[in-house]
Length: 487
Image 1 (cartoon, rainbow, N blue to C red):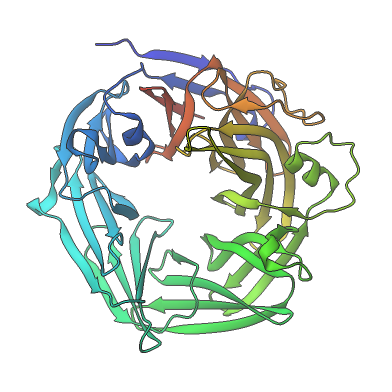
Image 2 (cartoon, helix red, strand yellow):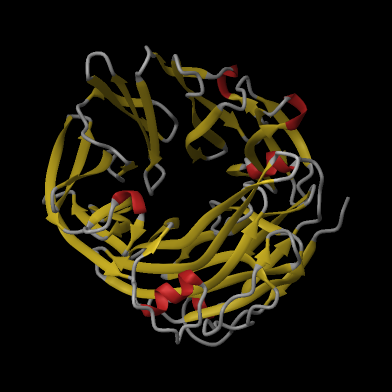
């Protein structure tokens, strides 16, 4: 058996909180048990003793889905093939002891949408009750649409599902909300007329929550639905503000629904896709009112980071095109949002083929409390390119106690400490680089640590285990590796 590499990194023994705690990095050996596409499609299900279970596509069966049980060196010890082809996508996953529950949807066919669920016993890697159940099946006429959302409560006790079928000929729709307990027993299901929906969440009391927004002249109308076992209510609220885009529910904390996104200046043309900063909103589930709303415009430093310019450069314009949310994370005090500047360059080769290059500059982090007040804003340098859209521009964002953590691959020539004054050198994903950890304490203090130097392994996925450690999946060509991060 390949030897497990254990590296204990003493990353900061001075100070209080996670930002000053030691971090242990456990690196498994490289493996080739999964091909590149399978690694990029991995979903963490849970642990069974010393093995981890993952849902992924199966390269041995033409990319159908399967569940694998692996050791720390990513050697597959068991494999469970699923009767689901690659057109299915994951809607929601939860863990109930040694049982993993999954809901998936196939909406690839224009004439139908199918929602399925299954449970896997992770200790034996068998399909519970030996089957995959169909939860819903929709037949679609020309012009009809079907949307499916899923979410799991923060305490893990509830899994919610929302399906919405739109009938173009009748100009009507039918929405059904369903709630399951941790063991996937159905608690209730009912049709409910939700409004415009862009995001869903589940509260720790088992309520299904939806968020939508619509532009009306100079106001933004927010639509919230709260659905429970005894029915539901729709709430409509307007705010006189700039145009909101890409907002989603990030956290449900102490009866407060915390949302974050970006906004576009009111006077700009929507086609220009200009972004003026971040926007945060808090909806109180008990008072059923918006209790916090904040627009946080980009400042000079923010624009310089997103454009990869020196921080001393004075910017006349504080709005930017092609700025999008990169990641969200709940925190014990509220939420954190990361946005970045992303664009794509396509050009035709001499032989007529099209080459595509993906660019990402800057990371703009904003943390808020449960009243939508900004706690801190921090910027990180980034100037990454990728020749194929295969998920290698990924970064992991999560909270460890009151500290926000961000793990990513970056150029080895970047400063070893947190220093953003100068432009970042261009870094093509797959070249030798550093695997780094940024930690931002609740007061905004930033610490940067290099977890691994000059490696071709790129971070492509991350998940938190039930034990609290963070599992990082890295990829180098055909070789993959599992890295465990413990605080």
